[in-house]
Length: 172
Image (cartoon, rainbow, N blue to C red; front, side, top):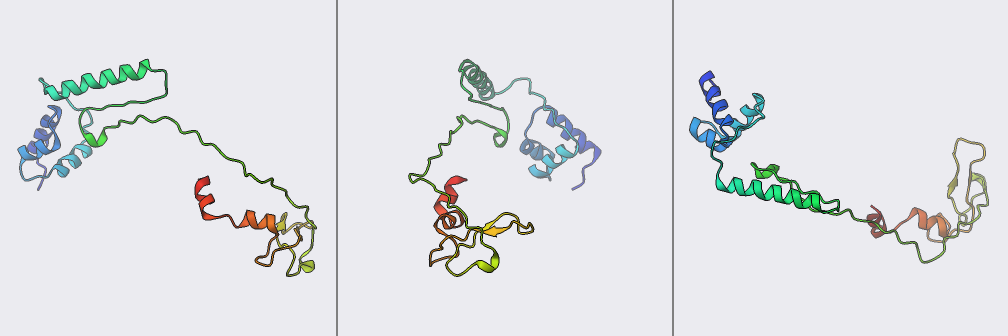
């Protein structure tokens, strides 16, 4: 289907009268609603004219939107109510309050062990292999405290390195 000059002018006229894309497609014939929407965007026809007599449903919606906005302004909370007339896909209505997050401290006291500052050659199967500092610097070392038999780190560094999945999801 080709867009002739006559069809484009009819499209512009019907769009400015406030007809929907479906109504315009039906009047033009041989064209889909999506084709009409695409052509409207390519022609950059953003402003929509109002029909001379708006349907009663639209008038009620406009009155309802102005009442909602007045109520929203009167309330001293941070609620936002936005109502649009027209395409329901573009209609935004939300009434949400910000959620305060509470972080709970662990019940047990956290004690960071004093590092023994071991070098790589001093590590054994039973020493903590948690790195301290930058590996390229001269003062780089390892924790060196007693490690559990189940892993390479001491009790403290194991809790830091291996967090349960449930706690990782909760933090986000």
